[in-house]
Length: 256
Image 1 (cartoon, rainbow, N blue to C red):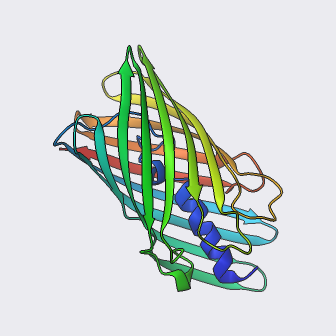
Image 2 (cartoon, rainbow, N blue to C red; image 1 turned 180 degrees about the horizontal axis):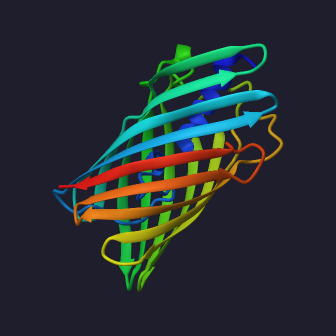
Image 3 (spheres, rainbow, N blue to C red; image 1 turned 30 degrees about the vertical axis):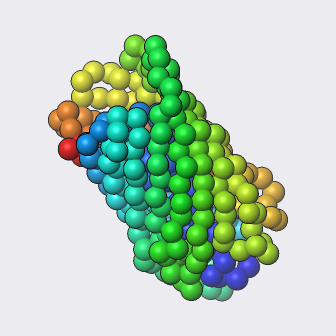
């Protein structure tokens, strides 16, 4: 496989399987149906390190992704995500490395139902060609995606599920165009300071020649330093051969 295509595919998958992709409560990938409220602003800073070893090729990479959310109304949020990626690929024969801004995304989350702890939202979005296509850090094209989000809160428990569609514009000859996404997550509130989070995520493999689809499990903790500042830490593990072996995630959330 061409090195640029390989890096581009890894960058696309890295963007898909990160909290930044869905704007979720860090470190989760699965989004919840909640919104920040009219006139309120939220800044999330997500950092991730990925490590994978497959067929004699070791790939490491990561991202730092600021996520800016503004409440247009009590039920509508505007979300901007601007990731910065770095990717290293090494085998016995070749070695390559790239870093730089990746494709940014703009999302609008609309919570259209809320009753008795059950809520639903829809979140369409655009992918902007801000990443360097020549380096494989972006697609060089506009893209789009849409997520249907459901959340149920009961006592200390919160359960969320996502069903999504992502248009993949990386490489028409080698990659699938239409990517499905499904994920479920839960958060358990221990007390005013601590929460435990778990996530299970699957998506269609971007490669046309792939043997299986990537599936991930994620576990983490959220610590509320104050009512407006959260810190988080998580570990993500691949459950299928096409999934990245393991990832470390950390981040912080600030509410204004």
